[in-house]
Image 1: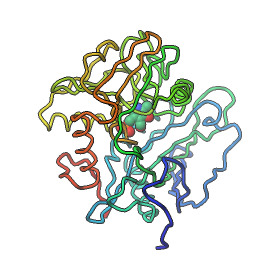
Image 2: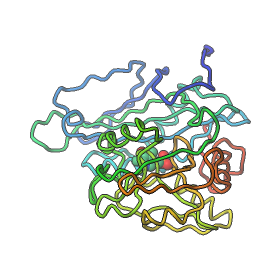
Image 3: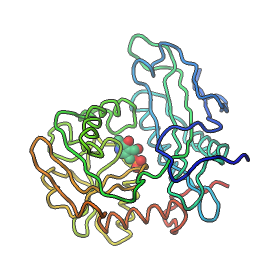
Image 4: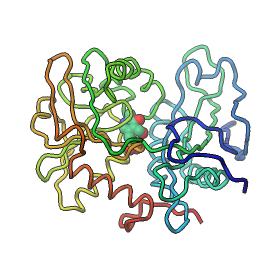
Length: 341
Ligand SMILES: Cc1ncc(COP(=O)(O)O)c(C=O)c1O
């Protein structure tokens, strides 16, 4: 295998061409043969539903190289399930779970040389994507779909250490509607969140924190991550129909229980932020990103947690345990890791 000239420690979270991507088409009521491509481009009909009516769903997960040299993929079955839910949510053909898993394993193996070595903070990001192919000008679902998987090495989320971040609440944007698509991983949700996110970033915040779109009273989630707080011995995370069910959040809840904590999944009133000891965002990208300050912009209130230069002890412990499980440095007691033979 040809060696790569990559500085694993300075990689950004960004696109990089790797050797192969895999694709499969749904046509005439069935999924066809998986195709291996080294081309990054797609032949698309100019009227395809993915281009006009947002028929597009995606996923994100990671593979790691362990100290034993083995490749570990973190909970791909959960991503397979969520992708089926997302597809069904916007009237797309759900991908069979075994096909999803086979393609993930194959594409990781075929691009093995891009998996960062054990000991660095980088990982191989896996991006499955499904799109509607059929041409439609009247609004209706496609009958032909393409499912594809690409991978690329990505760098550590925290380049300068595990540092607390600041986020902001703006009440004049919603990323999702109360009975809308927020619980599915569809591209349109990210487009809907872009104005708030870009405004937050332009003002020096790491992210925008969205409130529930109906009453604007309860915490929903950040652009690409769920929210959780620590209050005494409790792990508290929002229950909401307009947030993406985060796989990382579910793992952290289990780890909190394993560590003897209580877990509460319930609406969190924005004013309850004042009572939390620690706060964090969680998701595949960072596992957990501690939050130091939440500015409620329209109310002119700041909520702070701990100190700006050091993550809180509970968030740190939870994050570290999950990272260790992902890399094979802590026993996989819940069967979360798929080892590639
Ligand atoms: C909107 C949103 N919420 C939460 C998450 C975190 O989900 P997960 O932990 O499954 O990566 C993501 C990332 O996938 C996301 O895009």
